[in-house]
Image 1 (cartoon, rainbow, N blue to C red):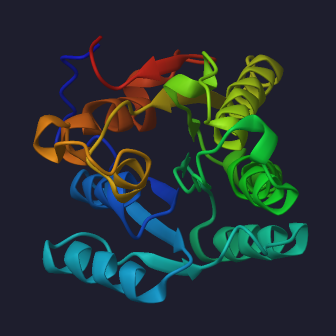
Image 2 (cartoon, rainbow, N blue to C red):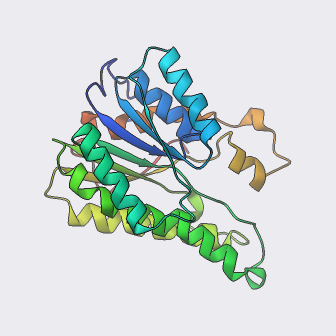
Length: 247
């Protein structure tokens, strides 16, 4: 699977929503999906970053993206339902969702975890992703084959000291993916996770400020798995948590 090569038109005709599309892996995934033929919906909280991604996609000759400025921390179920209604009205169906948006919080001892930090991380990393996916299900069901991708982490499989709320949120993400994958196993919707691993992103830099970034993979190095799970090549892949980097 690590040798997967997508056809140039692997995502032609597909409409794909990418959260956290203004930076890091989300930005790279959105641009990559557009290069392979998709119309991309860019969701994020910073309009200037989304606009820069929009401009790059258009400059490269990709289909004109849509921009959805939304902060998952404050978004409600109604925000997501309204967004889903707009997507259905504008595009007719949704072929894929990449849940890339997430927050790290502050790494600290368990006894120092404060409730506001805990709640913010759970809201963005788990609750927001759940509510958004729930609202989007009717639009995803309109696609011949739809892919929902959640973002996991190594600390969401084996807990690590001081990673507190973030690690717990990724355990919850893995669980949410597994529940959905089992529930929709006999439908046209497949649900999987990607664990990006150590990647050259701003979130990684906050967690490991002294690290030599030149030793890290870039988001572009990981795109094979993001393409695989969003393309029809993965129609029969469901309920999997895939490592983007070889161990």
